Amino acid sequence: MTKPEMILFDYGQTLIDEQGFDGVRGTAAVMKYAVKNKYNKTPAEIQAFADQLNREIGRYDPGKRHLFQYELPNYRG
Image 1 (cartoon, one colour):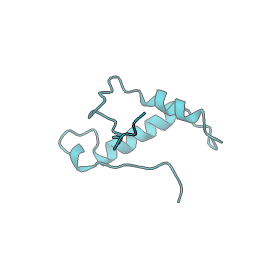
Image 2 (image 1 turned 30 degrees about the vertical axis):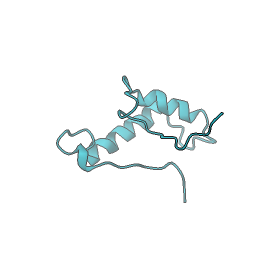
Image 3 (image 1 turned 30 degrees about the horizontal axis):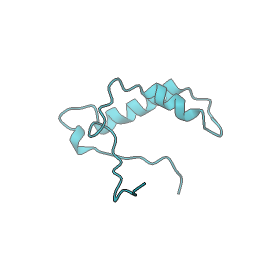
Image 4 (image 1 turned 90 degrees about the vertical axis):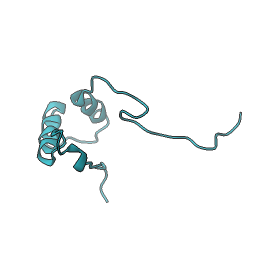
């Protein structure tokens, strides 16, 4: 087997067109691996909060969303 010179990882409408995004299902899948859920939040509650944050930063506003491209890591430093 020949080693590739490069591997390109990209996701989200460039190489892969993800139709039918379901944030609640994605959050539920990640929560299966959570060590604890201190406040007993459901995936739907977490997604509702994420939706609220996205509205506040303008991510859903077609005229502004290009200005607010945030990547939020899920680790503590």
